[in-house]
Image (cartoon, rainbow, N blue to C red; front, top):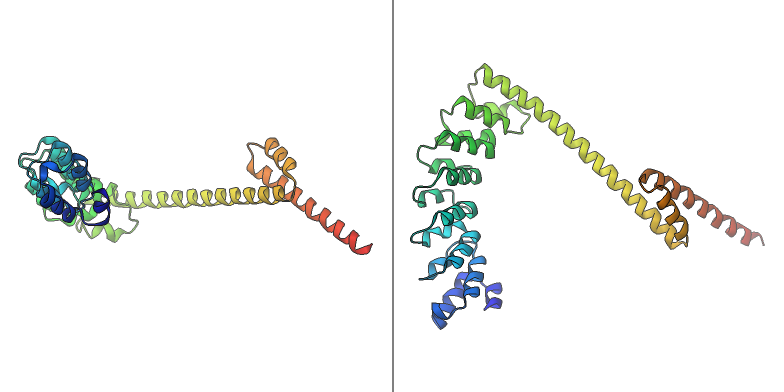
Length: 265
């Protein structure tokens, strides 16, 4: 059964298992595995009496499986909004969703806010924290409060003014100042990220050269000297590299002298 579920669509497999054995004869772990393999959220609908563990496995794989749960618990509803896939309207299938559920849902879907009737200020703020100014284009975000706009600006990473004015076409002076401040902050962030990336690159290059020199010298029979250099400059990679370079040059010179000596004999 496991092999079949690994090879074929879980819903297709489960349907055949049910036709052959019946629901009661299918082992619990097989039902759970079938739910874990179901990314579309339809397999749960094939079972008449799924256990709580089977339901939970289905919800964690595809939260939209909640439509097949007759009387979902609060935990099951929460799992549904946490793990739904490609279903921005899922919130409409949940009876009396809590503010927490609404916040999770709008954070996961850009257009999720439009499926909530009269979203609260805190839900709108959760939406802009997740999507920045772009979510302001949604129907339920029209006429957003100043606090929502300011939060949206502070969670937008663009350095282009048009990116803000596209969604906030008529900013007042306070909003415009916030936009310019955010643009400057983002430019500083980008500079810092580029600096850190360059430092990481240099560090990796340094490590690469260090490892390369060690490997070459050890292969040529200088393991003792490599170990001594490593111990002497344990905390200073640049000093190790310099010492290994010197040893490498000496080694090459010695080999060259020996070669020339052999040729003149």
